[in-house]
Length: 140
Length: 214
Image 1 (tube, rainbow over the protein chains, first blue to last red):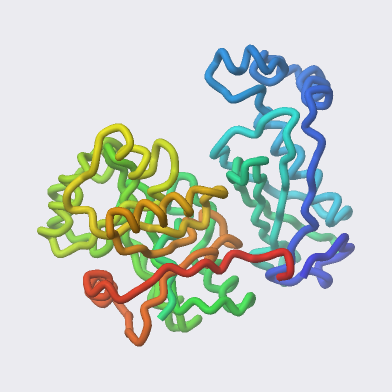
Image 2: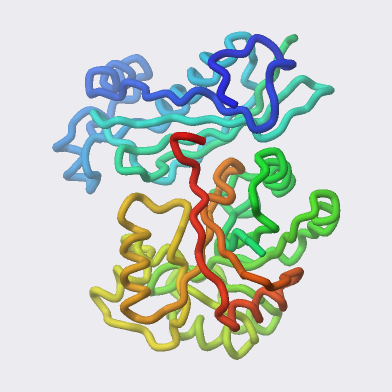
């Protein structure tokens, strides 16, 4: 079942899916992020420069992908605490393309009120660019 | 029996799925799988024992390997000590003919996976280097494929008269069962059973990918 938002552990079940999200990874947004994070490399902010490095175009920084996934989790469960988040970068996510983030509850721990999540980001061509997991704790 | 022949757990460097969570997911989602095969990258996990999970969840859990060759990635079912002594599983450029021959000699079953994929798939290498003798079966449906890749795998498998199986290639829990292999009217409870069933050739690939209506 897909739940738009959850406010507590009791509302979460194994198998639940987080609402899919298609975050803005336009050049404007990515460049703004790179300035904010002091993570300025041309492969993130210049399509031509990225192609010279062998990429199909400018790529979304890994730390931005992880931040977007964290934002998706908080959008789903505003009151939760992300105890850990772990990502694997399997392929490039291209700036100015459409990317789709998904999440799913893969385990729950009643004693600690924590849940484990699967996380993925799928690139415009259907390739899974990022996979990951997160451990999320609820206060209530 | 319906088995997912291609999955990865946290034992693989890029895998993030716990084996028990696979089991919980299969049961919670009522997936039609009877079991799955863990095919860890460039290694054979001889240590892990999942019999307690098989008993608890009523699933068959088998262990195999995904090795890397000069013609792309290859799944090896029925890995033995003898095979591990003759093949360096960590070598990312194993000659495919060597993998096929040594696997056969050791009583194992080797078959290229995601053959329609660029760089790591068999058929992209065929375009440049020609056909390899000894290939008889390939993974025609792979859960990680992008549109067009499985179509190419099916088309080329038909051209070369290869048998086809399916696997999800899941690296996270929620992707298990996207593709699988149906072995009609056969009982597979251990790796010997699986190797015999693959050798027998009576199986077909199945896609169970979620659709918009799911």
